[in-house]
Image (tube, rainbow, N blue to C red; front, side):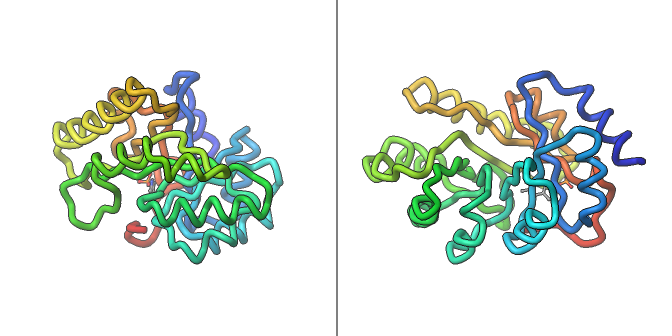
Length: 222
Ligand SMILES: *Cc1c(COP(=O)(O)O)cnc(C)c1O
């Protein structure tokens, strides 16, 4: 019941052009069904095996997003169904996604993860690398991946101005890439603790776990 109420509260605040990814990692299938019955269809997981298991157990109209750091050798297990891969941070990963997508005759949507946090632990590419990939001939040859946008995670801090400034640098990169002709339409930023800040900086996709499903009982760091 609390999931339903949390869901309604979050959804009510969002404008129509913002997509909510309900981050269900570590949560049981019953919790996902509760959000599903409230009308939600987009769920995010950070471990491939867990996402595969849930995909097999749950209704087929759910769109599964992989939000975690991706190991190349795991791509093949989700290539037949994954809807969006958020955490791409290497050209070699894109090449593998393309190869696996081809086997299933699909085009897999991806986001490039940018490093915006000051913390050493956060993954992601430098901005120059993102620009290089977006306009590379190498990318044009990958017919079965489509880069839809950018993803970033802010530093885990109470300092809202720091979070805002990190989101704002990614918003600028996103706008700059679009103005240079890259065909991006997704800016994935914001989690339970900082999505309101992210929305003020142009995010149109938020990834919310604990504010929806309740706290997880482990420290999340994919
Ligand atoms: C776990 C996770 C989230 C959701 O975190 P909450 O703080 O529970 O909302 C969002 N994005 C990524 C990449 C995650 O790993």
